[in-house]
Length: 121
Image (cartoon, rainbow, N blue to C red; front, side, top):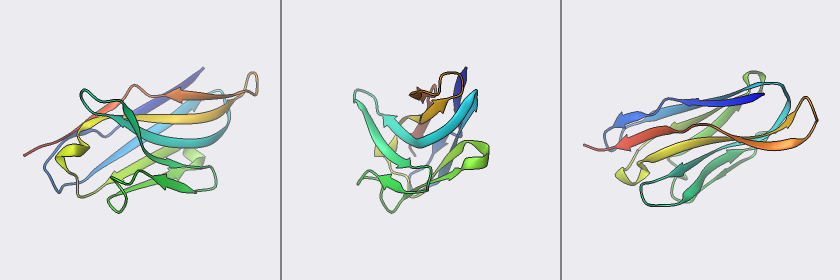
């Protein structure tokens, strides 16, 4: 079995910062890419940032220069440092892990349960 668990959401004022964490655990052979997605009320899920196993990153235009994704391969953990937060960043943030399972050596996507981020004064 595989689990993906996020943490670090909460309420923050505009201009503030938050750091999200996401850990993948279980019978994992290897992890390919990891990333963060978000879904605002009444909207679809959108990509925020992704990072490959070698550290290559990709960001949505709306967060470039404000958010930083990083990863600790030894801990199967990905982080999202969010600075200069805006009210429009309010959403549920989901972690995704694309990984190779140990029991069948097949690649699959796993999602966390989501962590809520609210940016408001």
